[in-house]
Length: 264
Image 1 (cartoon, one colour):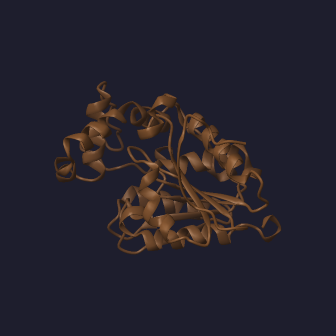
Image 2: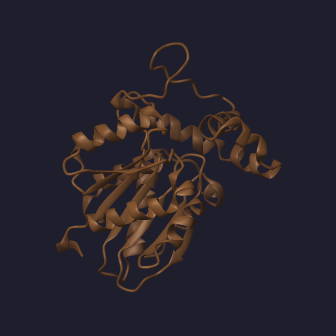
């Protein structure tokens, strides 16, 4: 089965007979951001991809969380083609929500899954806002403006200023996909019930300086998802796959180790 034509695949390498790890990026990110992590996993078959609507998968159009989960299942099926080795998925930020949604929809597809600081605002842990407690700022009708606002909020205004004109244009072009991501998380009700997850789960978070709502979400998942393992990356914040690739690789190996022996 070929990989979905709408998706740009970022392959790293294939280790014969090894588990395959599929990395799923978060909002306003891209598959290439996992290169540092993949280089540190030579014993595994690894790949990432640009989610539909982002970067080199923009031509595939805009989809909601369910559409991204369907895409991940198709990528996993293609990765498994011709191999008996298990497939695991590891998602960063909103990519973690995609991974959970896919694993809930098709538990047999993955041997185990991992997520790093997945946003699940319906659990009640939200980013601190000025004004109404717990309020979520409305999405700007200008998707390019929303992309700038999101990037500045997550990485910092100075980081936005340091981007080249081309870099800022690329982020703004990802604005429609970002807006769809945000609306998927802040709809009328929860998009899924993570406590129904049947697949072994590893949940990663940064150290004490990461944002409190991320830590609280991860701690809740560790306490309420049966068998979940929490892995803290000391000193890391939200972008741990970029700042702490060695530790993110360790998190990934923990996910692979969680695959039941019968599935290997």
